[in-house]
Image (cartoon, rainbow, N blue to C red; front, side, top):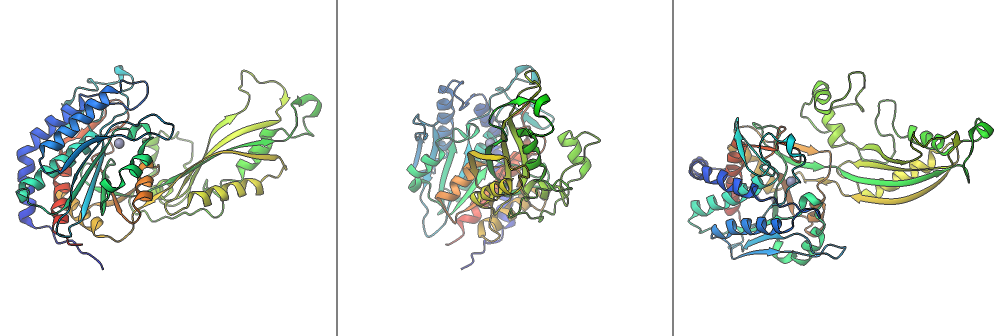
Length: 468
Ligand SMILES: [Zn+2]
């Protein structure tokens, strides 16, 4: 059965705008309060700040007075130590309404070098319509957008709503979510939902909203190439005996075609992105040198979002300072392969290994080593939640929402999909191309926060009218 969300009424839009206007100064103040707590989930930083940060978030959630439970929870990491504190709030659905899980994270990246900041990292400052501070965008504005949308839902329904809510504010996303898989397993029942809205990504611009519908996955592979059983003098054997690096370069040379596209067979690749991104823009954003040609063919965003990309990221070989006139017998290399949405990581690994073995013209010995696999993500085409979210974004921003991709991964999305198969995961966010998340002078476009609260509230109001 297809469920069609009801259209968003003008009355609702007006009421949500009005409510957001009334509380917006408070939303910014609460955001500043969260930014002032430097909760960083890396071993070298004071873990007590993460507890202060979780407490502050839990306090804001309790004050909405809509939840049956608000708890601070932890799970152990696979290595043993406890993970960072997450905040989970729940309210059960009534009358066959859906349950929406709202995800964001309250931990932040370290500030980096102080002198690179124009204002203090943990004291917000507003300049030219942007709020500066570590976490102002990534992802404390996501936390605030969720909380103020819930407050708006409560206000506009007099707290008489049937939609089920789960709020899950993670505390270690920037540290790679080490206890996330265990956390999901342990608290699966609490987190059970029909739709997951992740507020930890960004929009196409401050004007044009977006839903992130694809993420590439990752396969990394270490391997060793050997041609000799010991090093020998290049003056005695050079010219007749191949060194390991020569054999490796032959293998590497076979992995890209003349256009710079990855030429490993059996890898999924598509070119479905229809947003424009020019070569000039690519050159400016990436710092590509004038004489260097970009890689690949077709639309540039397709090359970054929906096609594979292969990079040699590590090499164990004598450094220039330690070099001597020797035929080096072995070399160890690490390849990183970004895989397209839809690709099964273990299939891509097999294809990569098969390619290496089949394109080894010097007949070197190949020994495969450590492997890392990360699943890509692709939001299914259909689903009421995507329809509802697109409409809400259109209304709130006044521009048609676009589907965007990310060339990298968000590892916890794969964990969510594994534990909750079939659940629609809507990846949204408040960042824009100038947000500089993770860098000095991180900032939030203030109007984007206002529009994000409005859009999120419209999604919740729409969901509250849906019967599953
Ligand atoms: Zn984030």
